[in-house]
Length: 194
View 1 (cartoon, one colour):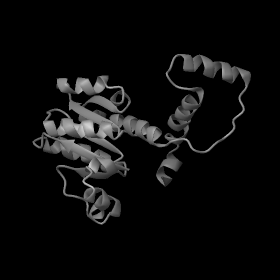
View 2 (spheres, helix red, strand yellow):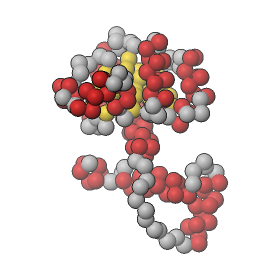
View 3 (cartoon, rainbow, N blue to C red):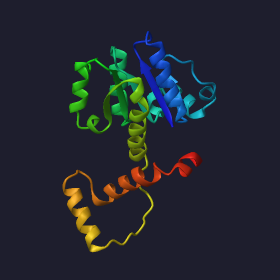
View 4 (cartoon, rainbow, N blue to C red):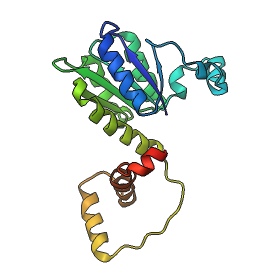
């Protein structure tokens, strides 16, 4: 997966290094305004073609992550661009900091509400935040395309019917999400293989 990490506050050197380190530990290819372009990206034909068309780098990313303890017009543009391109966005803001008021408009947008996540973080919580966000992103990006028949008992169907009444998901989406979160994501052998 490819992530673009953006920060206005380049003075948070240790914090930015910690965030980048946590992302790298998850095997993500990291692009950032504070890192040189990875050499593998310079040879990537998709990125070259995208640049020739004048598209932003966000087009080829799986998601955008912004350290939002301070904000700029560039950060707001990147967030708007990512939401417009239907890319998930994680905005991190440090403990004791308030969320930038201008971002509330993105929160209320019908498109952005499912793709824009805000998390107040401390360095100790980064692993938890990243795992939760990446799990949600993978679930969002992994579109169902293989038909599979599963026979349920009447009691299982009643439970699913009751459960989805309290969520905004269909029965199939609920089962896919539970399978992803409680089976695939927690299977350490499979996660090492992937």
